[in-house]
Image 1 (tube, rainbow, N blue to C red):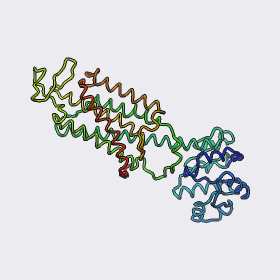
Image 2 (image 1 turned 90 degrees about the vertical axis):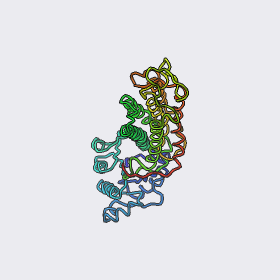
Image 3 (image 1 turned 120 degrees about the vertical axis):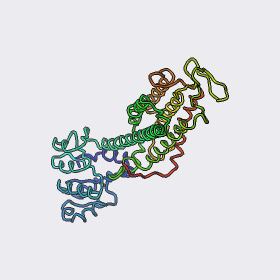
Image 4 (image 1 turned 180 degrees about the vertical axis):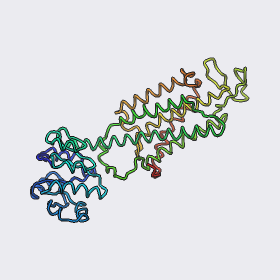
Length: 394
């Protein structure tokens, strides 16, 4: 441990992180004698009811005895660089994720061996900085706390995006496949899929990757070495949304003209039909049912996209959080992306029909699309009460 860390900054940082609440186990490894090390460690809250040991005693133990000692060890005094390296190796053999701090050249082997090596930017030697993964530019322990917070935030943001992206991919794949093999044709045109991919890959990544860290992230255990990237909660959330979206899209594809009557029913040369077939007039502005099934496909495309836009709010939560809107007002990028995507979606349907192979929709059908999309939010909240689905695929 670099000299002088314990003068106020280290202690206040420990309290801020709550390393007890953070579930991070901090060990002091120092070259000082054991009485000095225990006194400082007790003052800053590291040494509580664990073991304090000297390097020579640790060195004499067998590998198995060292592992047993490390389970409760909190302080190692009169420690050599080799002792520090040995401790890192034993902890990794025990399946622990190890982070090491250091500033001297002798610390380089341990910094290199650790999963995360953190060196000092001011007092650290060039060798130590080169061997480390992260350089603490201000030599302040609170910066390590911030790196823990931001590390968890970035990892969660990756998971949020994957949860959203997989939902879109599963639904689009099943919809196109089922439409093609059953003879109804693919309701989503290539231009539709390109636009969906733009929402999914670019805009959604921008929206979900900009979620800021919150203090409650420090209240949970860190992710383990063997934790899955897509956990059971995420599989549950994305499967619920994918099944729902597939259900209503195929329902429109196969169920028309009942109950929503999106099937074409205009005969060649006619501009309207009687109410016998329960169809509506093709208006001069292009609204109404047509003979090419474009209207039905536009309904499917529009409802599908709105389901993704509303599901972006669900994707912000990857566990059992019941409020998908919590903290959303603090993320202006997320709100801007959703707003811009909504405006562009409206334009692709109503004002750029030729480019996007769509037909302008009537007000009632717009309401249907928006309602089908909005149902994703309450459905996501209800789904939080279901148990996780552990597929162990990723």
